[in-house]
Each structure stands twice: as structure tokens, then as C-alpha cells.
Image 1 (cartoon, rainbow, N blue to C red):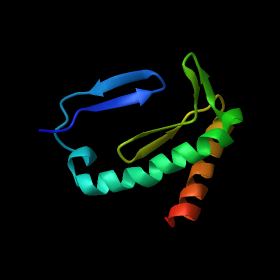
Image 2: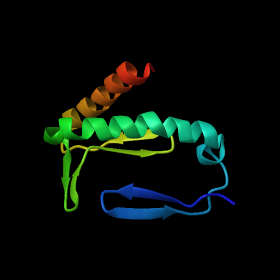
Image 3: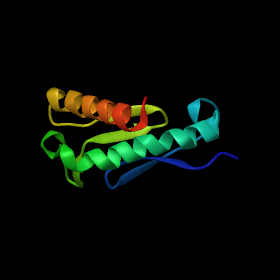
Image 4: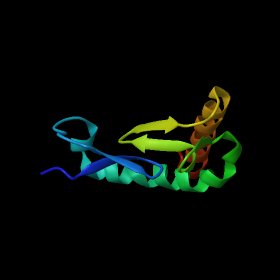
Amino acid sequence: MLPRIALRAGPVASPIENRSKGGVTGSRVAGALGLVPVEEAMRSRRALSPQYAATTAGGELTLSSYVDNLFSISDSPMGAVWIQEDFEEHVQSKWGF
């Protein structure tokens, strides 16, 4: 029995059905531990990048993640690149990788 997973973007959630292989069913311990630095970085960087955020009906979005993929969300390509680079710098300096 696999855990229920939903892909969230702001206030909208979409369930991911019928998963049977891939990263989510791999090492659950590694996945859970990998979530810690990603979530910490997303929370700590959120207030620093409002000028690069994408404006949506539900508010501003800058980053989303799914398993081991990170997606930057911006109103411009330059903003999306800045968000990714800022995230990378933070994770390298705080977590050492």
C-alpha cells in the first residue's frame, strides 16, 4: 500500500493516482530526509523573492517540488533563473550540498 500523494500549487491540489514505480516508491527514508532541506529552503527563501514570484489568483508562487524535482515559478524567465540560483546557494551554504 503506497501513501496518497497530491501535487499542490497554491490552493489547488491534484491527487497522483496509480503510482507503482519510480522515485516515490524507492527509498522512503532517503525521500523523507531529502524533504527536510528542500522544505526548509523553500520556507526561508519565500519572503526574499516576492519581486520574482508568479502572481496567481491564489497568491504569489515561487517554487514547487515533486519528489526530487524543483520547479521555479515566475512571471519572467529571468525571475525563474534567479529563484533557482538563490535556492541552490541557500542549500549549499546551509546544508553543505
